[in-house]
Each structure stands twice: as structure tokens, then as C-alpha cells.
Length: 305
Ligand code: NAP
Image 1 (cartoon, rainbow, N blue to C red):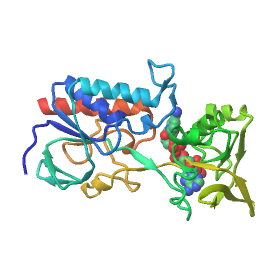
Image 2 (tube, rainbow, N blue to C red):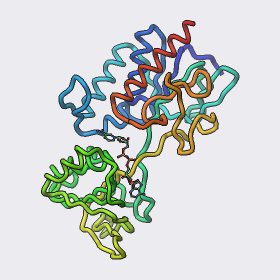
Image 3 (spheres, rainbow, N blue to C red):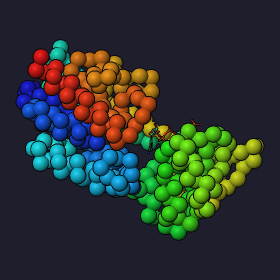
Image 4 (spheres, protein in one colour):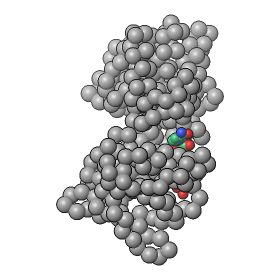
């Protein structure tokens, strides 16, 4: 097992992780960025971003590509591999990769983000890619001119319902309560879109298929069962943090999100957490970049003390 020469290893190349890499490089520190899938994380899957300063409107893919090219131009090394777990050996952290290889470092920044929650209905897994989706940006175009359903009542559900209404013939938004969690400006916007129907106080009970494709979404409301015609069902009911591989470090809360202080430090010295994987109220691109910068600046100060 060899000691690595990196000052810091960042796990996850979403907006938060890439921002950390930029700040660490500017501080003269060396870092390795490990990514298990595609760089950009949730941002890369977002259609249009209109609340990131400096860009009146930019696609998520474009923003992610711009940040990635900045990271690469600074000479940050990127390793495309999944992390299996992280072990502690006094002040050393051992990162075990999927192929059992180990990397040793004193400092880790965790930026692994979160994944969409599933409804847990019998047909759900089977119909992924056959009508069930968790990403309107990725799959919306497949349902052009068709009738789709969006499930959820938070910011994501409403934003994506609005986006889908520009592609699809009809969008039915189904929410389990009367009140929406989403910001009021999104709720207001919904009211002016003719092809969005809102159904509240309804639970999705079944995903009905025909010839291997989703055909209807069954809902129950006020003791009545109803089948809503839909070739697409977009589920936006929250997210699960990607922290399984850090579970026995004892740094997560009950929901699996990582607890940090204002400097992004976890309760293990030398391990930081940033972005959506962290326990926090607001998950925005600006807050992810802010977390990334904060961790990197604090870490570089700590290393120079
Ligand atoms: P969220 O705010 O947690 O909302 C999840 C929604 O799904 C809630 O309405 C919830 O209903 C519903 N839900 C949960 N489990 C369900 C189930 N099993 N069956 C049916 N419905 C279920 O998640 P989010 O919308 O993805 O947002 C996550 C965070 O990102 C939030 O902090 C949000 O503000 C932020 N965000 C911000 C923006 C923006 O500002 N532009 C965009 C996207 C996301 P209940 O309300 O009844 O619990």
C-alpha cells in the first residue's frame, strides 16, 4: 500500500467537488478528483439554469462542461472510478476503490451528492426507460406531444412540470397533499400554463403497463381510484444521499446526509463534506460552489498552520 502524493482527494466531480479542486489548485495544493460516473452531477442533468450569477440563462450541460474544462486546464487529475469505502488508520484515510486498489491521503473532501428517491411501487424498476424517469432534461424529449405525469410537490417537481409542459401535450402534476413545498413563484407560474393539470391529495398506487410500456398511472384520492393516461411518469419526490461507502465513519445523520460545521468539516479530522451530500436546507448550484470554496480555503489554511 503506497502513500499518495496528493494533499487532498476529492470524491465526486459535481459542481461542489470541481469548485473545491479549482480553489485547492489556486492555493497551491495538489488534488485528485475521483468520479464514479459523469462529471457535472445533478447540474449536468438540469435543463436550463437561470439563477446562477453571470449567466442569464445557461443549460446545465454547458455549465458543467465549462467548470470541467476550467478544472482540466488547471491540471487537476481525474480518476474515473467508484469508491467502495473509506477506512481510517490514525490520521491517514484509506480510500478503497471498486477494483480493491487503495489510495492513502490525509485529507478527503466528500462531494458525492444525492440520488432521486423512488416510489417503491412494484412496476417502478421494470419500467425505468419504458415510461418511468427521474430526469426530465434527460428523457423529456422522448415524450414530445404525449401525455405525462409528474409526481411531487417540491421545487424540482414544479420546475420539471413547467419544463415538460413546453414539450408534452399534457402534464398532470400529482401531489399527495393540498399544500406544495415548492417556492411560491413556481406555484404561481403553474397557474398560467394551460396544459398542466394539478391533482392534489392523491397517492399513486400503481404504474400500469401495456406491452412493456407505461400506459396509465393509478391514483387514489378521496377513496376513489382513477387511472390517468400517461406514457411518461416523472418522479420527483426528493433525494437519497450517496453515502453508503462512508457509513461506518460515523459522520452521517439519520437520513444518511453528512453532518458538517460551517467550515465543511465532519467530525473526523481531515474529512470534509460539501454540496448536496451534506445535511443542509438549501441545495442550489451557488450553495454547492460556496461549500466547495469554503472547504478548500479552510483546508489550505489548516495545512499551512
Ligand atoms: P423536496 O423539497 O424534498 O420535495 C419532495 C416532494 O415529494 C414533496 O412535495 C413531498 O411531499 C413529495 N414526496 C416525498 N415522498 C413522497 C412519496 N413517497 N410519494 C409521493 N410524494 C412524495 O425535494 P425537491 O423538490 O427535489 O427539492 C430538494 C431541495 O432542492 C429543496 O431544498 C429545494 O428547495 C431545492 N431545489 C431548489 C430549486 C430552485 O430553487 N431552483 C430547484 C430544485 C430543487 P410532502 O410535501 O407531502 O412531503
